[in-house]
Image 1 (cartoon, helix red, strand yellow):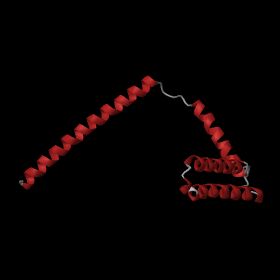
Image 2: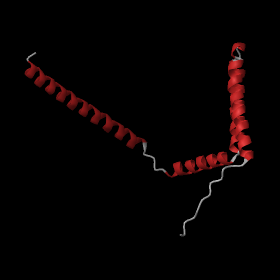
Image 3: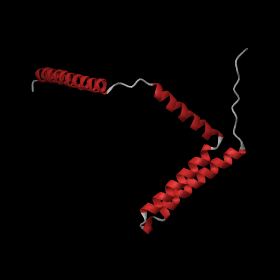
Image 4: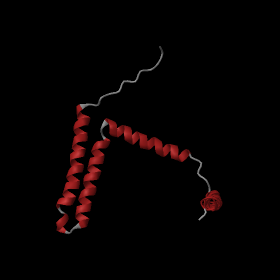
Length: 126
């Protein structure tokens, strides 16, 4: 058998500690945001929450799973650059065609509904 066997690493204890620290910082930011709700200083509360979010994200990015996620986002951006996006004219034309088809199908369904209602009224005698 020539297959390459990939071993999944369970992660080191350092990564686990980093992820727990990131989670604690994130929870502390959310708790602090609501804890100081009565102070009336929204900007300070929001800034503290953002700082905690950024700190937790940076800490999590330096773990094994964090590096994998950063790599995934990097590959995603690379793939997005390779996509052949439609021009504005193609987008507008396609949108207009979809709207026309929706109107035509709606009218056809309305006519079918009216026909079936007329048939049922004739059978029931109302």
